[in-house]
Amino acid sequence: MTCYDRRDIGLLLLRLGAGGVLVAHGTQKLFGWFGGHGLEGTGQFMESIGYAPGKASATAAGLAEAGGGTLLALGLATPAAGSAAAGAMAGASAVHAPNGFFNAEGGYEYAATLGLTAAGLAITGPGRLSLDHALGHTVDQRWMVPTALGVTAAVTAVVVGMRNRRLRKREEGEQEALFD
Image 1 (cartoon, helix red, strand yellow):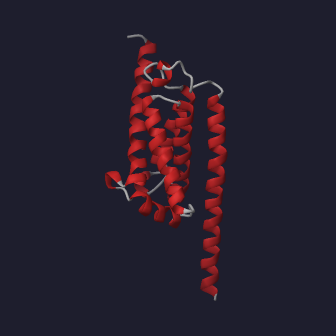
Image 2 (spheres, helix red, strand yellow):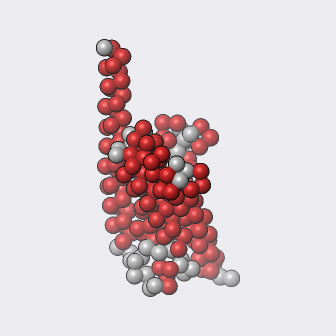
Image 3 (tube, one colour):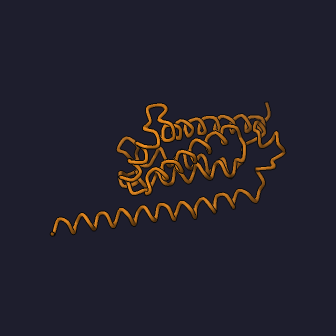
């Protein structure tokens, strides 16, 4: 086995592992599978943590996770798939950041790891054991990597920024209510 073959197998394992976990999390949000709460419950939760409207936010997060995870696992449209999943995980990291780094304390460790893995795959590419390779990389062109990552970063910054503003306003309203 050559080093090149080992790289392809390693990328396949990363894609299957990260993609599978992302699909599971996305389907929890979308369909309530694997102990999830579906769109209704997840939408209510999203609303409570500042992502509004909640149901639309749950749908977007679920599609980015389930869709991005599926495409990553298949090695198809890898720049877009990895970017979408990384964006969803950046949004999740923003929720967990106040709890510190470690997942055991509710921190962002897990979301950040999934997001960085997805972004790394978007940049590195899927390897030869992928649909992108089988299809001649028609949806995995070099220019797609910075475009997908750039668009995702911009959208994620806007969404997380809007969430942070909502939370600040909510907090200010609660403080004003205390003094009334």
